[in-house]
Length: 248
Image 1 (cartoon, helix red, strand yellow):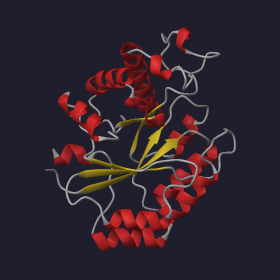
Image 2: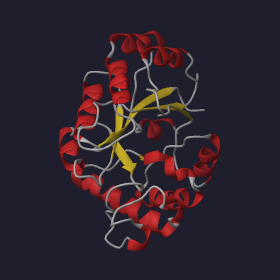
Image 3: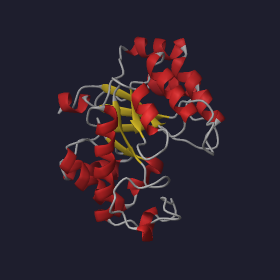
Image 4: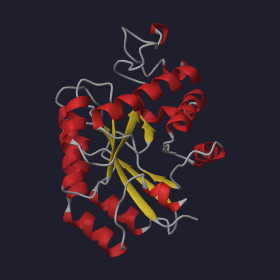
């Protein structure tokens, strides 16, 4: 088994300027150690510039915004943009082409390759999307976030590095309250690489989102001194997805 490691990853960098500001604060002042960037939004370039030097993966976005791949067919778009409702119809070939294009765009924006890939709305739970993403991950040699044991087995059967454990959710209420974080950290798995997914930020100012004020609760959680104290008690220092290269 790999050594114990904790990745605290903030999703949605580049989603909205206010969200990005909150994520960067959570990384610079708090305990968040990694983030994933949406590269197909109007706010991606500024977010990438402001996050220079931080640990950044790709938040593969197939549910909103414009495709990056020039050859992406309009039949799978609504008014030229992605639609979450149409995403399950995407073929592995389309997902592979778009994922590779988004990975290339991230490298161009950030100046370095993505540390890993995860997917907005966990759409890689659909088999066709996962298949296309695995092809792209092979080509780009990047790890992929697994959100359950079945996905973990599928990724590993294809030789794709992934996390051993996964924590996190987003719903009507803020998921990561300070109390929940302290409880979860107290019972972290003793072995393996655990990803804790989070959504810190400020309430979106340019994009309509069902997860708005909840982001501010999560931001307060991850910059709170008690969060760092909880990690200190465990002797755990959060890291990025590069740890997978060192533990396997």
